[in-house]
Image (tube, rainbow, N blue to C red; front, side, top):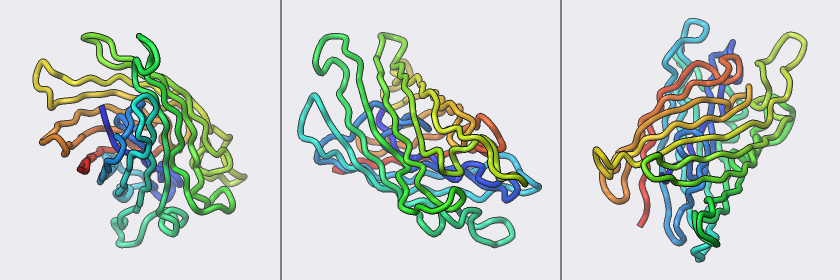
Length: 270
């Protein structure tokens, strides 16, 4: 498919504070990056929301909002690239207070970039290949207050008749960031670094029903704020407008938080 940048970074930052999770994303499936690339000279706008479906500590974590823009920047057919920037915010809590992460609220801008070669670009049966980085934050500092998750990744993908597209890869993040730990803050320190893991997905246009309907499942390994199993479906209302509805189940509640319902509105320009 095409897709957004979503992805969350607030992920179960502090369970005791009922935090959320977030991602500054390139073209993605539902949660993880994809081998898709924004075409040269075009722009992609998106608005993603993540709403927790279960309570933590007696209340729901605040809604996470991700607004982003992505641009295709290489005028070649065999090798393409995209760059993007996201603005992420946490909504107010039930008691009227602000978001749960001072770091994210104070430095809400994140960058992403990707370079990729589509299927069959250089030889027959060649899989699509992509490498990139996302959630590149702008605030350094100690492990608790920086937003530099800086997740680098590599992916390969191939589309098979009737089955759809299968993707697999690996990611590595900044182990010095709290979101890449396997536990929340504890009395005697923080959890172990969990800054890498597998990326895997299946996606397909459900043409038996409509060429406008797409469905996918993806998985990001690791007991950190980003590890999750996600599934969802998208409908193209027009050539340039699509809406995805999905569900994220995090690998570990202590780091990713409670499951989240996500909506992702995507607009391509021109």
